[in-house]
Each structure stands twice: as structure tokens, then as C-alpha cells.
Amino acid sequence: MEDLYALDFDGVICDSCEETALSAVKAAKVRWPSLFDGVDSALEDWIVDQMHTLRPVIETGYETLLLVRLLLEMRLPSLRKSSVAEGLTVEEILENWLKIKPVIMEEWSENREALIELSGKVRDEWMDTDFTTWIGANRLYPGVSDALKLASSRIYIVTSNQSRFVETLLRELAGVTIPPDRLYGLGAGSVHIINASCCPKVNVLKQLQKKPEHQGLRLHFVEDRLATLKNVIKEPELDGWNLYLVDWGYNTQKERAEAASMPRIQLLQLSNFCTKLK
Image (cartoon, rainbow, N blue to C red):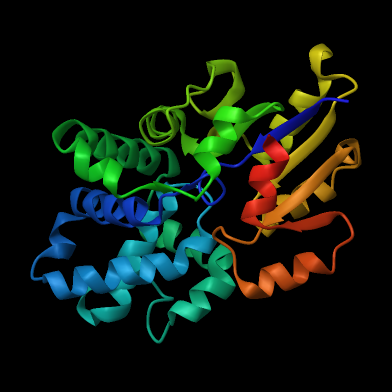
């Protein structure tokens, strides 16, 4: 029986944490230039470091801009416009991001789609003006490139990243070209998963399993976000999917321990992942 693997990209195939953090600071400077008056390189470096710690809470790229501004408000009281920044810690953001995000979005009068567009534009400009540095801020996890090249399974990429960046990274770092109909991301084919109203990856998995050419295949979904896998579990229609939480991506020890207690979810090591695809 043939296997189909639906793979998340960031945190499963690619470690884009450095590029994500640096792009977020660049975009935040464009969106709120006055906030960065007097911000020195040491504070910027601190923000980038904290963004690495906060990477597990990020589902979609626009959230990185919000985190950069929130970190600024935490460090510089004179900039505070939100009700949550005073006394807030990075650990509390990790625990409560889903509650904090709608509060600051409203208090800062921000628009999700506008932030998504700005984030993509800034990354495009970085790619165009300094491609070497941009590509160098990303890396594939060890063994993944060869596993993708040698894969005997049907591979789909299901990501909340913008598809043009995913295509470029796979081509440049892995030497792999994914057919457009195998890539589900922002702007990919007929499915724009970032713009879906709810549980976007759940919707993609439903579409994949309904395709006539996928009938009879073993279905596997590999993620680094426990919250996404929980959304899948809530859907009886998706009971046929084998679910995996990777132990090398953007998740915490607490999340991995919780996943280990859930019968539907298998914890996956990088070496085993690379073997499974071949």
C-alpha cells in the first residue's frame, strides 16, 4: 500500500527561525517607524533572541510583527499602547498568546490581511536586494533534503507560509521542485490556507483524502504544532490520518509530553522521519 505524507514546512522541513525573526523586525520598522526611533542594536538583538524563544506560538507570519511590537512595549514603557505589556514576561506570552493576540490587535487597530501583505513584501524586498543573506538565514534540518529527493511516498507540503518562499527554499536548499498542486500555502493553487476562516490545515487534509487518486493510500500528517494536531483529532472525518508531532521543531517539552499521552499522536524523531519518506 502506498503512503501519502502531508508535511508542514517551517519546523518540520526548514528551520526558518532566524529569517522569521529578522524579517519581523524589518517589517515592524516599516509598519511602525516611529517606535524604532532611538532603538539601538542591542535592543534589536534582544528582540531577535526573544523571537527564537517565542517561535512555538507563531502559526502565521503576520504574528511575528505583533510580537516584535509587544516586546518593544515590554522593554520601553514610553511606547506602551496596549493594556497587556506592563509586567508581561516572555514565559507568559508562551502560555497565553492566543488570549493576548486579539487584545493587542484591537488596541493597536491592526488588520490581519494588511500585516500578511506587508510581511510578504518585506521578505520579497530582502530576497531581491540580498538573496544570499536571506537564504543563509534559513536551513534545512539534517537529512531532510536527501529524504525528499529519494521519497517513494506521495509528498504534499501543507503550510501557513507563503508558497513562493517555500518554493524558493526547497529549490535552493534542497534542490527539490514541488509541483504546484502538491503545495498548499498562501497563494498555492485554489487553496489559500492562511485566508481560511478556521482550522485551515484541517480543511486541506479533508480535501486531500477526498481526491480519487488518494483512495486506498495510507495517510500521514507531520506537524510541529500540537494545537494543529488537536484540531485534526476533533474532526471524526479525519480519523484515518496517522498523526505525528516532531521532536525537532517549534514546540516545547511540555507540548511533547502532552502529545506522548495522546493515543492518536506519535512523537517522531528526525532520523525516523527521514527513513519513513524513503
